[in-house]
Length: 285
Image (tube, rainbow, N blue to C red; front, top):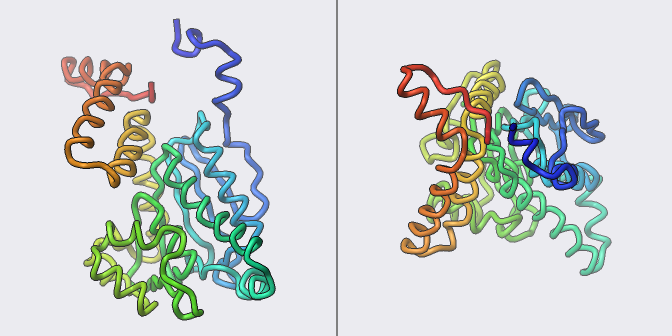
């Protein structure tokens, strides 16, 4: 009996669905094999976000929690740039005319995008070239892994427009990636972080040639998608949850999480492949 045969169809219908056929409205969405690629696609403006693209990205990453056919995600931008942040004319201009309730609605929506990226079980690999600024830098930060180029420029430039650096989780997440002092410098000054410096600081996992950055990000995503995806999802969950735990709580939580992973068929497959001196073929269950 297969794993699917053991589960009530009504449970599967409400909690599992394919996303390969999703038709994106405000960016490009492509699925090849088990890897999805999100491409921010307004190259004439360096791929800024709008109210509509924020909301669609938030909803799509939320749906990825239930996806059966997508096991890793790549996020990139078209035309040699990643993302220039919120569109000056379509977001910044309208915001200055809003009252507090609507402004809070907007800031909660942008924060919900980061929450959805962190909550989806798929590893997210950002392929970053050129401009990566404001909300674009946040999307890169919220990804699990980041590949950049030497010519890329990453800037958390909120203070340059009169706002605090505490945007969309930056004050919580950025120090955990690059350290408190370096995060403070970026958030207080809004200066650009060049690609080579970003790699030295640990913001980028790898530097690539501009013509190769997307292909290398997709290659890593394919590698991750072929791994034990249920266990990878647990790893992502624990990396996020353990920020708020003591060491003792973290060790106990990891003991429980690992015991669950030992119940998976992928764990058995790995053992049987080791005994047979072959490579395991993981299926994510």
